[in-house]
Amino acid sequence: MSEVKEYTRDRLTVIWDAAKCTHSGRCVRGLPTVFNLQQRPWIQLDKATIEETMAQVDRCPSGALSYRLGADISEESSI
Ligand code: SF4
Image 1 (cartoon, rainbow, N blue to C red):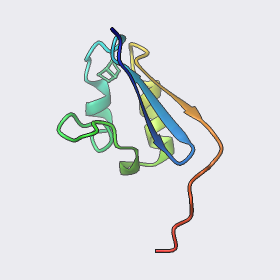
Image 2 (cartoon, protein in one colour; image 1 turned 45 degrees about the vertical axis):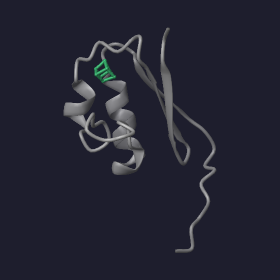
Image 3 (tube, rainbow, N blue to C red; image 1 turned 180 degrees about the horizontal axis):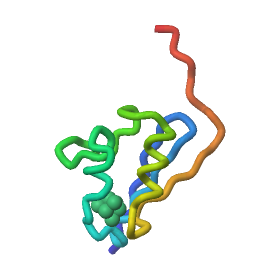
Image 4 (cartoon, rainbow, N blue to C red; image 1 turned 120 degrees about the vertical axis):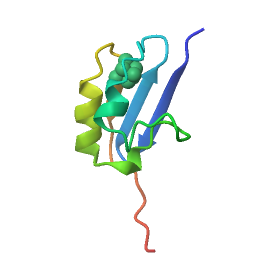
C-alpha cells in the first residue's frame, strides 16, 4: 500500500510519495523549516518561499517529492 500525500500553499502543491522515499534526509537537512519530522504535518509550506521549496523538492534524489504549480487561488486576507 503506497501513501501519497499532498500539501498545498497558494499555487504550490508538494506531493510526497512514501513508497519512493529512501529516507536520505536530504530534504530535512536542506530546508529544515519546511521539511521537519518533528512537526505535523511534516511538510509546512508556509515556512519558506515557494522558490526555496521548489528548489529543495528538485534535489530529492528518489523522486519521492514533486510539485505542481497551479493558479493562485489564495484568498487575500484583510487581517
Ligand atoms: S529528500 Fe526525498 S528521498 Fe530523501 S527523505 Fe526527503 S523525500 Fe525522502
